[in-house]
Length: 432
Ligand code: LLP
Image (cartoon, rainbow, N blue to C red):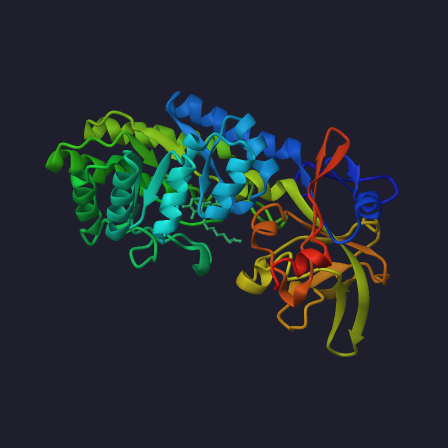
């Protein structure tokens, strides 16, 4: 199957991280997110070990926690030696409450309010990734009020067009993120940051996109960034000590997706970066990478119970499940592909095409169209959607006032609830 933490038992049941999915659904209720702790750890270790070996001790992977943000995942990231990327007070608060050492947190976002900036400083966030000149000035002013010097990176847009879908494409010149190198704005913001007394410019950041399979994208953006660093040293005498290359490596949602060898890619990027540094006569900066999806995606699956099974003769068949766009909006938003299986019927032939849809009052509430499933699908069957560990829980909503799902973490044959199921009273918790 698409990941080696998925197998099929002799009686045709899906097993995830060594556990029978159907049994876990009985035990923890439906619908349900499952996560495989060992897999998260292995993914962290792949980045950590490869980055340290390829770029040297100063390198550090930052887990981009927008992919899945809850207290336990920050504890796991910390114990694997990772830094984190956070993008909001909510993520900062979650990480802090989980005991994450906030000096290893990098605060992103294209629009940090004064209140966000103050909150992040009060919580000891180590580095801000400043997006635009007004933000640099705001960070400088608030740091002055607090009597601190804030370490910052500047987010630049290298102008790379990745081959992913438009909505997650962030490295282009016309992006809402960062300051473009091509237009001269990157140089201007650098000059500004160097003049600010209460910020310490440590270097630069770029992020070219998400679900990227083409390693050339990372090489080209690294090249543009290093040339910029060399030009800035030439003009201003400022030598960047850090270069953050962002996240973006793709994962397998379908059997037909390629499998990326992350470690090999990191070695390739490192060889290229070192070669460029040599040619530009630059010391190797401390490299950061910010993987999100590739840390948690294949460490998660979602289980649902089938309700209505409908056939519209001559048109299509529907399988409706007890979740949907509230717990996984990615097909509705991006038409993202997923592998969908009948968790207790893994040995039955899949001979019928069904649209697997959710329970929200909206036609767009589709988890996946045209899925091959057994002809015997009926009420009470269990559906598993695979590779849901990234950007599912973190993008979940209470649309239609449907409570959010719990997350059950599996480790060495033990299961623990790390996010409990929302109750109906949670749903009205903010209502006055
Ligand atoms: N660093 C920055 C600055 C980012 O903006 C992102 C993702 C990452 C790192 C992590 O990228 P990853 O390794 O996860 O590809 N909601 C969309 C994905 C949006 C990604 C936004 N930024 C989805 O569900 O596909």
